[in-house]
Amino acid sequence: MKVLRFADVIACGSAKDKRVFIRADLNVPQDNAGNITEDTRIRASVPCIQMALAAGAAVMVTSHLGRPTEGAFKPADSLAPVAKRLGELLGREVPLLSNWVDGVTVAPGQIVMLENCRVNVGEKKNTPELAQKLAALCDVFVHDAFGTAHRAEGTTYGIAQYAPIACAGPLLAAEIDAISKALANPKRPLVAIVAGSKVSSKLSILQALAKNVDQLIVGGGIANTFMLASGLSIGKSLAEPGLLDDAKAVIAAMKARGAEVPIPTDVVTAKTFSADAVATVKQATDVADDDLILDIGPVTAARLAEQLKAAGSIVWNGPVGVFEFAAFENGTKVIAHAIAASSAFSIAGGGDTLAAIAKYGLEQDVGYISTGGGAFLEVLEGKTLPAFEILQKRATT
Image (cartoon, rainbow, N blue to C red):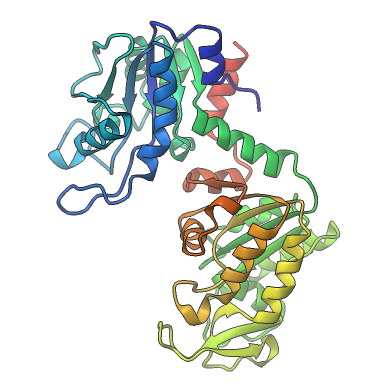
């Protein structure tokens, strides 16, 4: 994927003394008192900002926070806590500007934060009027917020249309590289793990991956539906009987390519969905009518682990069982450790997936961890993200 990168802009001297507008993803969680409870996204934005400052640019950075109403700013919408935390990380004050659309004053070597961009009228619908005003603020636009790359908004798409230079920041560039390595030109065999509660929420992803991957591992409620489609009883487990034909179609599409969707041969069941429920390992053919399947069994987990260790590339979205409960975490734990031990290039995304990786302390052992959420899922669906589209266009004009 050919896009202009901010590092290249700096290398050719096009950022020095220029106005650089950085769209970051600083949408961090806060408690009821407005205190930031987890600052990973702020810390992740620092390298791009430091690059711009070191290059002698006049730096503006903005982000959305929460779900504000356009044109109706409230104190809870403010990026003030974010500006304070960013200032601590940078070791300098980061002034916060409100009502900035019609003009920003910032000197080369200095930084300002522009208040919550989603308060601006026209941001979500990407109106041409707002997009042109945003572009007039800068000489260089830097998109460094992969989590918003699937949205065509004023600060993610419109500004890139009209800014003199539009490029990808280091975070976005890293996502592009990882996605290309895992999906566009993968080392084979390519194994995808797609898990979650419902097939319906990830049906388009499953259908898209079935055309490309060598093995499609399903987990959670999705696996239950596939087990049902394979003629197995799943008791009172979560499933979607109305999508059995779709599950069968995915299995058939994989089989036609000489690939497979491994169906669990053993499972971990319980009578109730609770952390203290008694866990029972059963053959997949022995599930009782009052059983809940809450994890894959140890034999299935070990078999999948061996296949993952032999993979060339791995894409992971979703834990394969209720890993939050100790009695039902083994499948996810075994798979996570197998991915970490594999020589394959691995990319993982999705909130629950990231939580599992953190729980087992494997952050350094996964090839790339995507924090994009919805954007990551749309990539798996085979969609071209708006941010990628406009940056590719600008790279050729």
